[in-house]
Length: 172
Image (cartoon, rainbow, N blue to C red; front, top):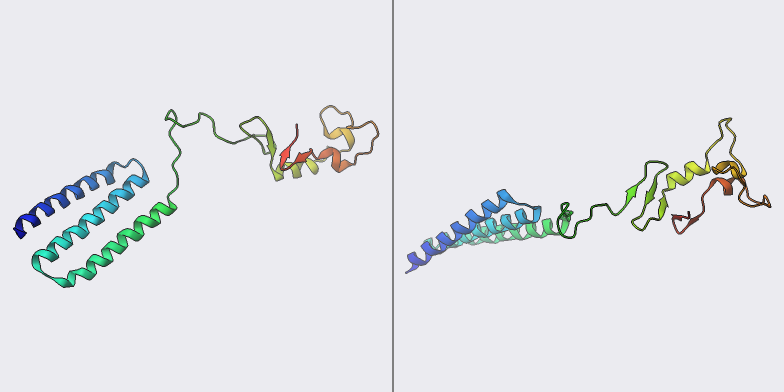
């Protein structure tokens, strides 16, 4: 009777190991391969347990404990640090446009709702922008229209050259 149980257990463990190797090869994701590796480790632990039961050898128990711990720690580590893979284009839940795009000029990004976001580098370049003669631009010269911002002329060079920013967002 013990031999029949050992044969059935060995066949089931061999089938699990074979299917795990197929899943290791095919993937498609890193987490699929991780689970397959965990199943393969479990099949190895089971095979050693069947051998220990058939031969009545107790010195294999520490090996079983170590292999079980290695499999558990490996699976938890990979699951904890696994990166979420983005869905492929055309798959349900995928977007055709990325969430945030960087513009080419001045490091200004465009948010999905159409608002612009200026990076600190773009703001610094705008504030320190110099005229062809090497002098800092003043008043309305920093803007394309050439008109000063206010008729009172109370703005400084830094105010004219720096775009208005509210909570990290550039106002249009």
